[in-house]
Length: 524
Image (cartoon, rainbow, N blue to C red; front, side, top):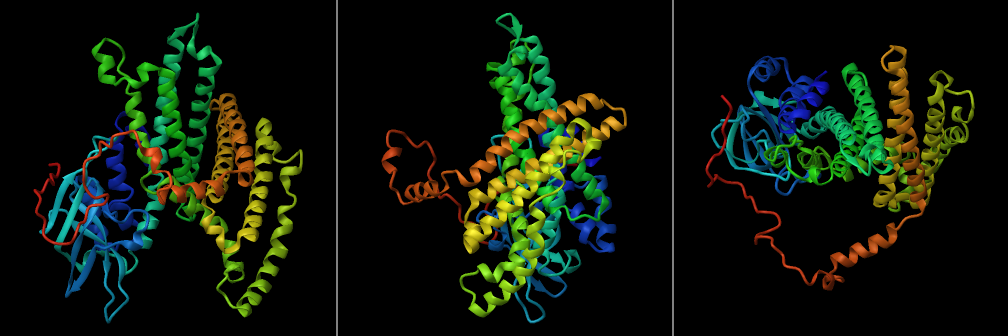
């Protein structure tokens, strides 16, 4: 229900939806719910429920997807920790009352230290919000740069043990990632409504533009994809509610698939709207037309492919989980640095595992014409999913055998493996949701049609991705990329003027007192 609320609110203001998501999904409430003490929950959760806004401070100017580089420090002094560092892109940080801060505790005689999580009062002495950042989209969010200089935090405000901060952050993000597909579902529903109304109203060459196949195909994609995204969201949200499932993979796939699909749906809506899609709502209204913020939707959705795990990082994270079983049984065998004795032991272990595992990939229920008959017209799609899931496992195993320890460098291949898995997961969810709605007598015929359309569209994408596993330009692309980085093609950059302002690519942010005006402005 929380995700449905986010979808509803995000359809009106993605910035407000982002505020709620940052507060609830990754701010103080979620980590305290999962890892906080009873005293911490009693002190902070009522405040978050009533009036306080929270923020999550992890990213730093030189730390994005690689938190191992985190530099903010937390030094124990008696019953307190002293925090020093600079945090970047702190969503809600400009207006927050409470912060979750990730900082590194140095090793000490009583423990190894490590990245640790703290609840910090935003008005603590030594905290300065030095800048409110502005962006291409989500222009209403309160995102800033926050400096901490000798900020004293009671040890009682530490969440979990020292060194547990990274696990807390990643666990929090697992559930928090579901807020993004929720907003993407809302965007899809709104895109469908506007696209339907406009395509029925706008007439060209004697027919509404939606009746022309080129535009109709876009409407079909938006409708079918929105149905599938909501199915994936509902399934993943239900698994999160049950508190008994490890939803790392499902949440990551939902975030990856939804953020990419929603961006394309918004782009298709702008295309359907033509020049009016590129024009702002304010400009449209000023000349007497309906103020449709299609261009704002496109801008606002773009960030979803980057934050809370970029598409590229999500693919690698999911791929790592996909090959984890292989690494556990054959890790030493494929490690070129391991001695022969270790390889021999790993080989014996792997032989037993694969003797049981590989035969299961040869045949399955997906090859039986009667399998999944309870799904009626959608049964064929589920048989396709079953067959191609085994095909995906075979491809992954073959790649592990072929590249061994170099597998992790084949990011293009791994990305396609993950994209195939995401499509198969969405197909399954769409079919199950359609049958669920039909069983309840809720638009079953229409739901089945949408699921059928999505699955047929997804099958085209899956077949292409399988072909591109082995027929691609990855090797050449790596050579060209090296050439670009080595300056081999600088001649191609001639003939333009760089309008960038001077300055370093990444600003140096040494610890110390702030020299900037504090722009922190909590909401009364």
